[in-house]
Image 1 (cartoon, helix red, strand yellow):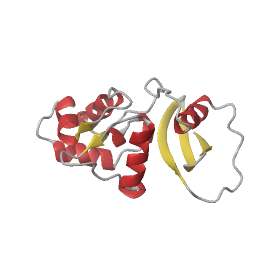
Image 2 (tube, rainbow, N blue to C red):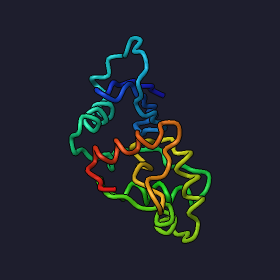
Image 3 (tube, rainbow, N blue to C red):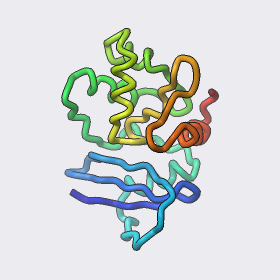
Image 4 (cartoon, rainbow, N blue to C red):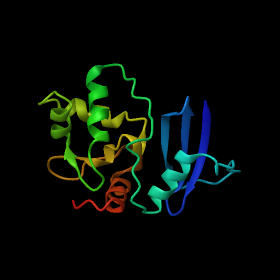
Amino acid sequence: MDQVAYQAEGWGIGELWIEDGRVVWHELPWPRPATRLPDMSGNLVARLVQRYFAGEPVSLDDVPVDLEYETPFLERCALALRAIPRGEVVTYGELAALAGAPGAARAAGSFCARNRLGLFVPCHRVVAAGGLGSYGSQGVEYKRRLLELEGAVI
C-alpha cells in the first residue's frame, strides 16, 4: 500500500492511501505542520486532488476506489454519491432513496459519518433537510468551503 501526502494551497495537507491502483482511504487536507512531504509528482491521483482544491473543475468520478463495504446498502450509498454531479446536493433522505432504501435517512447519515474516501465519495454533497448539516471533525465551515468551491448554491 502506498501512502501519499499532498499539499493543497489554502487547505493544508491531505493524505491518500492507494492499493492496487485504487484509493482505499483519503484524509482531507487540514492545516498542520509540514514535516517532509514526499515527492508525489508521479502520483496522478494526488495531482488531480490538488487541482480540485485549486478550484479547477476536475472530475474524481473515474478514479478507482475501494467500494467493498460490509453491507449492500452502504455500497449503494457510495455508488449513488459518486453519481451526484459537482455543484449539486441531495438530502440524507434523498441519498437513502437513491440507494434503494427510502426512509433510511439516518442510515445514510451514518454512512456519511464513516466515509473513508473523502472527495471520491463526496458526502459533503449531502445536506440536512433543514440546512447544511454537519461534517464530522472538519466542521460545517469546511463543508461549506467544499460546496462553494464546487459552485453549489445552498
